[in-house]
Image 1 (cartoon, helix red, strand yellow):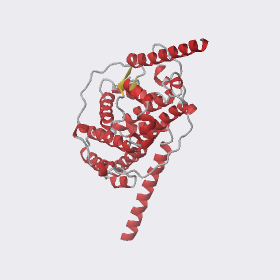
Image 2 (cartoon, helix red, strand yellow):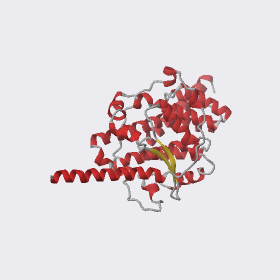
Image 3 (cartoon, one colour):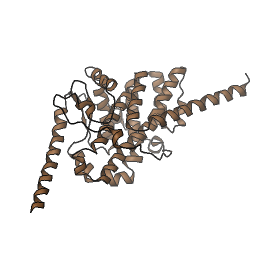
Image 4 (cartoon, rainbow, N blue to C red):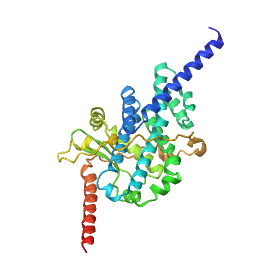
Length: 331
């Protein structure tokens, strides 16, 4: 085969892989459920990609947050416009992370299959220079913990400007009372359920701060892969079909909870307008040293009582307001 033929064949292989990876990303980025499943499939094929399991579990939580918006008492507290804006925020952030991260995971699998690093393809997918370096490093050194941190750092920076700092979201979500009160009262949390009725996780505080989100991501990774709890979390992720409804884990509680609605029955497919994202690493060049630090190992405890006591208080407050309103009408 002549050199020009070899070059042409090589270019064809490049185009075929890139188009395949692009199509796979589009198909699996349809909604919260498809993302949750896609991340898990990657992890099941490549257990060294720990971030993929973390992403799947965090994606489940995003689904629960979305369906919460259409349940009581949230429907009482927030108008349709506010609920739609919050849904759009959850959806946009998770869609952006998937569109950036999934091609990276596929490219690693392709590299593993060929036995050679193929991370030059990441330029085609507009992946940050930071992650290109990290993937080459991982392919050589197999440092799984460093890769988890790198992906957490990268993805939280990916959403910072397009979502968190975007004028529309900043004005209508992050500077509004519903978000600020939820943040202040620690009503939002990322939870890892088990099939034996326990919940583990951490409150989400100061979500608009990139350093706090990175810190939370590292804490969650440490919890997810804790040797005493990982088997329980992984079993749940494999055996419980994601629906976006909290009933996925509430059905295992000793006290029966009312069934919550499934995400695909509440929301139509949301179409996103994609833009070529700027490389946050090139424009900022700021990877803070504390982003790489390990988080202190906190005592692991069942947080179901703590989480649901806050939710029950919210229900009680809404009921009280309803009673007060009815009294005012009588007078």
